[in-house]
Amino acid sequence: MSDAEATPEKPAPEAPSSDKAPPAWLDRLMNGPIWVLLVVALFALVNYTAARHYRRWDWTSAQRFTLSARSVEIARGLREPVELYVLLSSRDPLYSETHELAERYAAISPKVRLHLIDPDRQRERLIALAQELDPHLLDRTAEGRTLATAGVLVRRGNRHWEVEREQLQELGPQTRGEEDDNASRLLNAKITVERRISEALLQVDRERATTLCFSAGHAEMPLASGDRAAAGLADDLRHLNFVVRETEVRGQSGVPSDCDALVIAGPQRAWPREDSDAVVRYLRAGGNVAMFLDPVVLEGRVVPTGLEDVAGMAGIGLPPAVVVEADSDHLLPDSPPVHFRADTWNEHEITGDLRGASVLVGMARPIVRAEGSQGATSLLLSSPQAWGETAIAELLRTFVPSKGPDDVQGPVSLAMAGMISDGRSRGEGVSSGRVVVVGSSEMVGADYFNIRVRASVANANLAEAVIGWVTTRRELVNIPARPVDRAALLVSARDLTKIGVYVMLLIPLAAALVGLAVSRARKNTA
Image (tube, rainbow, N blue to C red; front, side, top):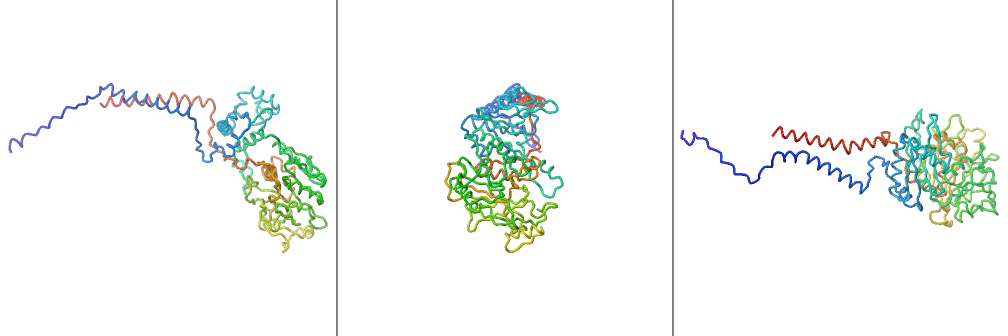
């Protein structure tokens, strides 16, 4: 073995580095507190930028905190400034949705001024507001708490509009075949805060109330209280900023021109030709008509109403028949087949909020399209097994109906809407020439406007939807009810203070401690 092979080769010396390593103390500083300070500075910069350029995002699945296009249009179109008061306690289950949506209205319109009054913490402010506007705004619980009867109040000058707490939420749709249907509806309740606030803004922004005239003089349902009266509907409409009055319609006097719509509810006597001609003239002059017409049976036959020409102007026919239901799923217990439940709705602006609801029907007449007409729209249908019975005498004698070739074939339309073609316009945004015919006055009966009954059947809702359409007061048809988020986070003022401490102090402090720990770890391993 040679000496060259026995001697190990020495490694070549490294070339001296031109960069001098930083001192150890500077390395520790750069990898410790400096980075923490940079993170804190970045955090402060982001918060400052967010405060100067405010924007919010709604990541909820149902977009519960995003205003619809119609609500944005209403808020931005206000003619004068309005005061929007939220009068809910922070402990109220609906406070989160109401507070958040009210802030959205104020953010998109400088004419909406938001005021938050917590009855538990600002009792004196609530009492002062009630003394100024409405003493009935105050309510006292059994525990001695002072509450507001309204959850939301909107004010413009000397006008104001109250939204009761119960109106901020509605029951869910009916479900067929469940024993505890009411419990199911409560479980599936929906939030209507946006709809109610937008409606309140419109109410105080309107220059005048809508005038609704109920016809009299033909044994119609009176507005006074009673078993057969329209007092429930009239009271509800007055709360919605309608002027409701009775008007005796005669051929010579006609229908007053200031009536935005004429309601003919359950006449028991046929209208003379000169009286119905007055309604025809009113329609052509730009009026609107809603008719709730029962089948009037005399001597075993359904007699004409005298209003066939009025309905025919909108392409609607009134055959002399009574609707008979043969589907056992729609029949009422221990009742004749002329009393039944209807729940099939066609697509129309009137029916938009009624899907999934049921209507109770008693002795209804079928509604058909007039021959050669295509313009009228059916609103509510019976089951396919129903028909319009024309042999009334036999039906009343036996109550065992049988379908004949001359009967109106099912499914039978129970309500229909249309517009006349030769009416005069009353101006932009004002309804003209609208006609709705419902084959029963059951929809406007006082019993159906009881809050408990309204939770089960939609007769009152259908009547109000009809009135809303003929007067173009269905402004909120595109404002949906939102599903209840039962895991909603309710944050109080105390909670916000805690969150501020966590975000502004504890989180940066924790970041600093982590930085120091990393610095110490690097020092120990160096």
